[in-house]
Image (cartoon, rainbow, N blue to C red):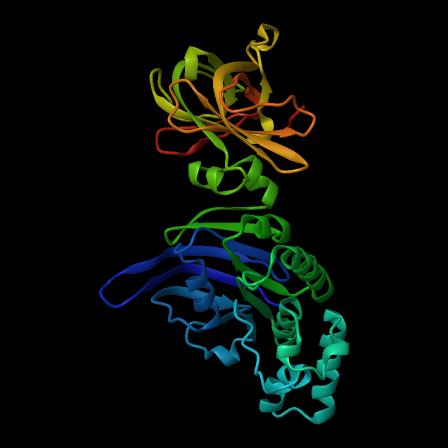
Length: 382
């Protein structure tokens, strides 16, 4: 096991194109960290820099207590699992897993012990004599992981290893990877564009965008307390709803700031947020997740108080997902649609229905004109 520390890591290609912009990150010994972000954000490039497959233009990479910038990939104590399984088709599972150990000059008994132990951990010991063509996608991925395990690396690097699997196998492999980490207690850095993988696997998530880190935190911290509009919109399915709003009142006190905003339809909502430079008349963004919105087919004025506001909207689309349904509605004055996640017991809705959306203030997020979150004073929900 080993700690990985990145200090002002920069990557530039010929011509001055900068891909990674000064990354600072400290990954603890034995931690499972997930890099997540859209395609082209630099997460895989950074992983390859850690592995030594890409040169580091600037900054320092420490693996354990060793400066690793100029250490050859094979001597960094890392093992990488790629999106493609990259198994030798003419070799058996046993031979694929044993290949690197034989190259390293280990004795036959040492090789056999390592392969048998890794196969038992991954529950593929009954497949050791088969060729890759005789395996399912999930079994091939386990072999690829086993090939990494036998090396007993200080750090595992995973580059979107589940992308080629179907939905059911991905769920199964997520469970297996979590179990594997608990058993091996080895540092894991895992790259994915799939937010579900990030939320279910990572002890901490690093959200990337355009070669920069937007936010680092536990899955629940990022979900409940996104630091900006990008993180708020990237994590969550459906994505967080964003409504245009205008600041109409600011009440600063010793315990925080009460900010009153006007949303679609002229309704007013007051949120308790921490200090942030807001002014009367400032254009801000109100954010709320689909599962936190209540929906009614007619306005209930009893709910229209300081802690919740109703917004008139029209249904445009209803998606039935079996255990839930997603209602997409458009509020007056809004260009985009608002997604509402409801249980299956909801009354039948169809396109064109008039509805009222209830937005509880304690579930709302407020973002300033620069997209930065105004921290809520309380993250505890009733």
